[in-house]
Amino acid sequence: MRDDPTFVEQIQRDLRDVRWLDPEEIRSRARRRSQRRIVVATVVLALAGVSAAAVAAPGKPPPTALPAASPTPTRHEITTDALLQVTDLEQSANVVWLSQSGLGEPVQLDQLLGSCRTSQGYSDGWQMSILSRSQTLLREDRPGTYGAGEALVTQDLYRLVPEAATKLLATMDDLVAPCAEWNSVGEYNVGGATGTGSARQRWTVAQRDFAGDGAALLRHTASQPVDQRTGQPVAAVPRPTSTAVVRVGDLITVLKLGQTGTEPELRRLAGVAARRMCAAANPPC
Image 1 (cartoon, rainbow, N blue to C red):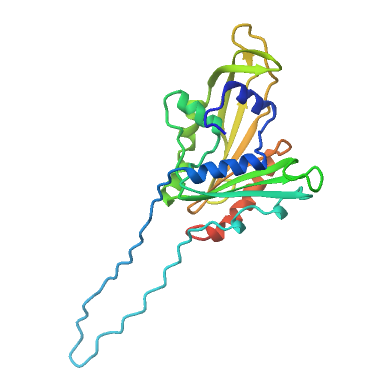
Image 2 (cartoon, rainbow, N blue to C red; image 1 turned 45 degrees about the vertical axis):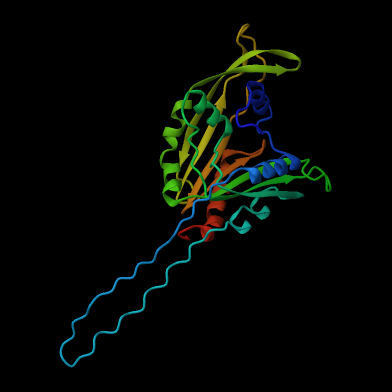
């Protein structure tokens, strides 16, 4: 998938609410990721010992030093049990699981939000992760029709430098501020009709601190796309979409639901995801 969608792709995405990748697209994306030049930052942890000279009274031995406390092990790998599980879903019939992992990936909250920022001369604003794991849970229409059914939830789980994880939630309002009102313009091709269209896109931080060590509910709405020359609609009014961003320690997860998902269900799953992230986070809960 290209990083900068055309206007018609935006319209098509809005008409379908969320465009979910099929298995082959996911495998293709994973192959592209593995071919990128990856710069992996290595964090070196140094343990410094402090010695003190003890002056003892004549005839008395120096005091015995107390053993140093064992440091909490630092976790690096993100295991699959840190992700949402099929049993966490309210709809669990015939669910299949697609997963991939990566190194040095950007924490991309919303692809179109990044396009909004860069079109105005800003950086996309994404923090960089150390490593990541992603999954899509699909409900099959029929047993054996692998990946052909409805996408129930997608989840990206990232490990960041702790300061970057904290900054991501703390600066969320600044991230979306340039896109509070964005007039997107581009070429469209809908039902054989072509032209230049426009639509008003909006992003807001709708709710805070409902899960984990910090959380934000990012809501995207858009006006009905119209032809710039005639002012006539070229597509239906798109359905609002929501994204949950949750931090636990040095971990960040990004959650999106399928077409039938609701914000209350998204918030519930965000809480479940936070609890599952606890054991893998630095520090653990």
